[in-house]
Structures are given as structure tokens and as C-alpha cells.
Length: 496
Image (cartoon, rainbow, N blue to C red; front, side, top):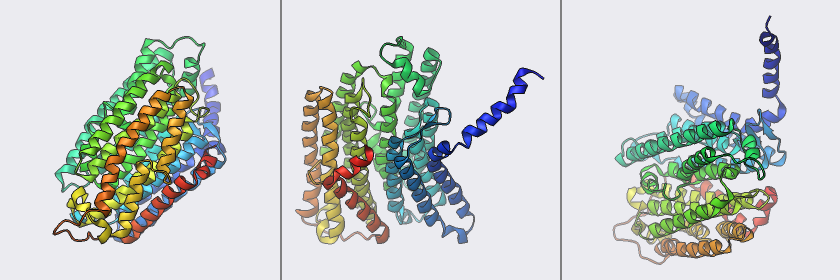
């Protein structure tokens, strides 16, 4: 028997020991919970008797994933599965954000699709859980190929969810636009991976980090080109200039619960990996990233100022927030994102953003139950008189997105600009603050419409299909926004 055949049983046994290692299961458990939820959701579509179990199964899958992420946050296990997957506190913190974003999108979907004569679909819930699983894998990836699998596991369900309202041409158009541009950026990512592998012989982040460390041999122009292509692919997911043009159309055309998931979870997942892979970019690229961030801030804020559709305004607002977060990444280049506080700042910022933007989209989804016209800012006038609780919650979310003290968004911006000051980029921080002040104009415009302008003639109070789901969303989002705004130390203590 050859030596290769003699070693085969030992190699197989080694693979099984790696697979069934307790630490590996701790890192994989959140993904396993979501995957089980996907399968069970599809099974419930086999009969009407099982359909009633779909809702509890979705909630149970998200709750189980959150439980495993909390355990991982308190008891991190490091890098597992042959150094391909992180099981650390950072991946767990991001994972909890994905669960929150998925839960908000799921709650907002209750009753939303009935306007088109479509009952809640099993494939909708299965695709939503798949997208959350993709985000989780992206944030935990320690290998470029593993990240790409997570990227596709996120993107493919979102393409389908964007076009789920098949009776609306705008929804189908949004799904097609997102698919075509997303496929192009996926190709950029793969080509970048191929160039890096040709230059270094590896696609593992640990190996690449050693090769990119100061004092090591230069990675070469081929690897730098590959890193640039990967960065371009990530910037598309982050809605950063010049890869932002698709955002308003896709956000407006997609079903509002899907838009909520795209606006919050996708951004968080891409930033999670960008922080881990930031060492691939040279420290000298910090100026370029900061410049892109400021341009993105300017385009987002100026674009939001002139919008008459609330959904498009939130899309441009999301572009501006991506620019703010990119400033923190620029300040982290050339150092350890955990040590210099960039990771903590971005996680906190995203936590406040997920609940602020997610809450705003939840209110908007409920308003749309009265018709598409309620996405127009003009028809939000006087909402305080018709739906006072929804108006108060929406005003709080606008104040948080604007960075007003007392809400979570204020501390998120504070920590981001603190990273820039520590990195001796005070000038960029001041420019970012000025751009953030500009954003207050369109957030206050919404508040003025809600409370200080009369209700338009002929507008009746929009009906809410599922007040229970809306109430749960508002309680969760309002509580989280106030908690992060008034007691930021609680979240910071968990982040270390």
C-alpha cells in the first residue's frame, strides 16, 4: 500500500476531529440555527396545517442564533476550522446586530404583502433567514473564499426579495438592477482574490496579515491591485461613492421590509469584513479613503435635502452614514482596528443605526398599508394628529440619525470622530462634523412635517395591518435608541 493510502485514514480522522471540536461548534452554532430555520420554513409550506408554525419557527431561529452569539460574546473561542472562521467577540457583536436587523425586517413584513393579494410566503421567510446567515458568515470570515460564500449567501436572497412584489414594476426593476450590479461586483471580488493568490499563494487573512506586516517583503503590485478590486467590491455593498448610484432606485422599488434589511444588515456585514481585511490596504490609502468618505457624505446629504419621497430620503441618508463610517476605517489604517478603537466605534455606530433606521423603515412599512402615497413627505404632514405614537417614534429615530444628544446616534458619531482625532486626522474629523450638521436639515424637515404642518386635504389616517408587530418593533427600537443614547457605557462594556 502506498504512503498516501496509509495516511488517508489519519487525515480523515483529523478532519473529523476538527469538525467536531467543541470550539468549532461554538463558532458554527449561530449559522446552524439559521440554516435549520431555513429548512423548516420551507417544510411548513407543504401544507396549511404546518403554515401556522412558520412564524414561531422564524422567531425561534433568530432567538437561537442570538443566544449562541451571546455565548460567543461572553466566551470567545478564537479562530476555528483551520483558521477560516472567527469565533470572537467582534463577530458575535456584529452577529447580534444582524439578528436585530433580521427581526425588524421580519416584523415589518407582517401584513405588508397582503396589499398585493399575497399572503406571507414561506420563501420570503426562508430567504430572509438565508440573508442573515450570509451576513453572519461575512463578519466571521477569516478567509477570502469563506467571505465570498457569505457574500453570495447574502446577495442572492436579497436579489429575490427585492423583486418579491411581482405585481409592481418598480420592485421587479429594483431586483434586476441590484442583481446586475451585484453580479459585476462579485466578479471584481473574485478577480481580486485570484490576483492576491497569484502574488502570495494564499487567501487566508492570517497568512496575508503576516505578509503585509511592517518589515516583511512587499506584497507586490499584483497583490495591491487585487486588494483594490476587493475594496471596490466592498465599497459597492457599503454604498460609497462612486458605487452609490444604484441605491435610491433599488431602495425605493424594493419592498420596505427588504429595504430595511439592506440598509442596516448589509452595511454592517461589509464593514465587519472591511475592518478585518483593512491591513490589505497600505497606510498611505487613509487619505484616499477619507476623501471618498467626505465625497460620499456630501452626495448623501445634498441628495437627501431635495427628496420628496421619504424612502429615497432614507436611501441618501444611508449613503451619508456609510461615509461617516468609512472615516473610522480611514483612521484605522496602518494599525490594529481593535487597539485603536475603530472596531468598537463602528459596532456602536452600527448598533444605533440599525435600530434608528430599522425603526424608521418599520413605521414606513406600516404607513404603506394605507397606500403608496404615504411614502411621500407631503402626506406625512400632521401625522401627529392621526397617529401620535408612530409620529413620536419616527421623530426620535430622525433625531438619532441626525446625531442629537440623548439618542444613540450622537455617541456613534462621537466615537467615530474620536478615532480620527487619535489618528492625527483632526482636519478630516472637523469636515465630517460639518457634513453631519448639514444632515440635520432634512431630518428636521421630517419632524416639522410631522408636528408643525397641517394634514393635507383628503388624507385619512393610514390603517395599520398588524399593530402588534408594529408595537413590538417600536418598543424594541425606541428602547435601544434611548439605551444607547443615555447609557452608552452598557454597550461599550460588552465590546471591551
